[in-house]
Length: 148
Image 1 (cartoon, helix red, strand yellow):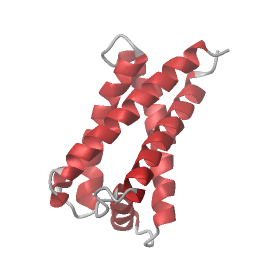
Image 2: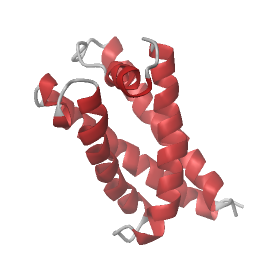
Image 3: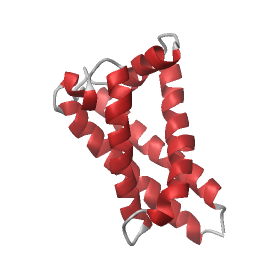
């Protein structure tokens, strides 16, 4: 059986990778090309941390937060989240992470609470992304319980 911490990190990385691939596919397809959450992360990091303008750094922060911060937090909270299955608990966690991002990252990037500076596309697309993130983190975390 894998340790819960390793499962959480593995689940967080996998979920971050999945939503990152969806984002890249969306941008490559030219779907809402003017809205790039990684650029929002870049602007927020510049404002909060004083980092240089760097897409690579923003991607790095995105993966560290998704893997380490959210992965470990899910590990700690999973037993207490509502839902009978790890995937359902992951969906609940995804909604919570969405709320955190909407009231912290987007305002720091200058696009207002819930990213409404971008219109409704920001909160709705980010909710979908975080639901996917939550479903994946929960499913992978639950799958890891069964692996020896």
